Image (cartoon, rainbow, N blue to C red; front, top):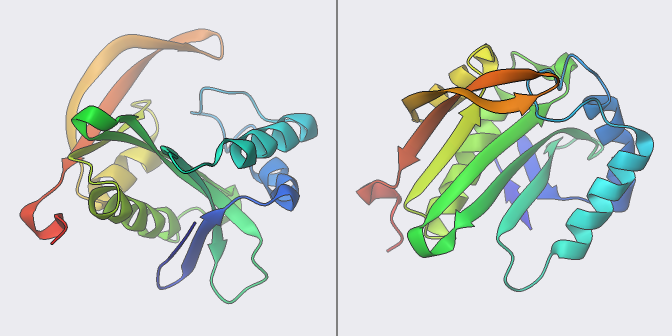
Length: 180
C-alpha cells in the first residue's frame, strides 16, 4: 500500500526499515508518551516481520512507514490506522515521528492522508486518536486534522510505571468525505 502527499510517501514496511525504526523508536524521548519503552533492534525487526506477515486480503490494520518524497525513501516516522470495529465503521489513528523532524507539519500531513483513506477506502464513519493529556504534539495533530476532543478518562492506562489519563479525539465522516 502507498499513499502520497505533497511532501510524503506513506508505504508498507520493508524488512530493512528496522534500522530507521530503531533510530526513531529507540529514542526514549521520542516514545515518551507511547505505551511501550524504547525499542531494541530485535523488537524492531520482530515488529516489522509481524506487520509484513499479517498483510492479507482482509487487512484491517494499516501501519505505514512515513518517508519524504524525492529523498532516499528512508523512514522518518510511522503512522497507522487500525479498523477496530469494522461493523461499526470505527478506526484508531496513531503515529510516531523522528524527534529531529518535529515541528515541520509532517505528521498532520500524513494523518490527513490516512484519515481520508479511512473514510474513502475503508468506508469508516469515525476515526479516533487516544493520547496522554501531557502530549501537546498529539493534541495539536488531532486538532489540525479536524478532530474534536471527546473526553478524558482518568487513570485509564497503566504505562511505564504509572497510571495515565487518556484524552480521546474523534472525527466523523462528513458528506464531502463520503465515497461517491
